[in-house]
Image (cartoon, rainbow, N blue to C red; front, side):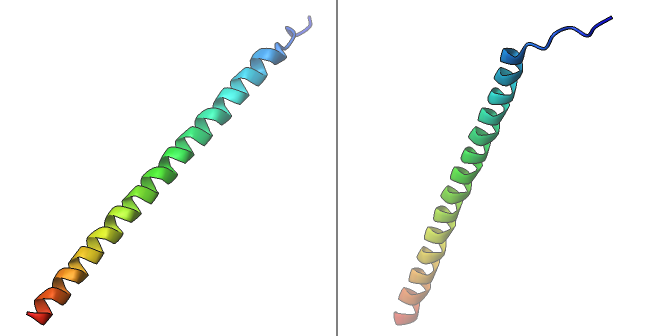
Length: 57
């Protein structure tokens, strides 16, 4: 009794889809991390500017 033949087209389709999903998720995480970094950097800059303005007054 022989095993059924492998459908290589479907196998490559599954692997390709998995890789696409992985890179999509990693790209979204990188984008979210970058956006959060910009938000926190701007927040810190506003705090420092407010502290400097209050020192001068």
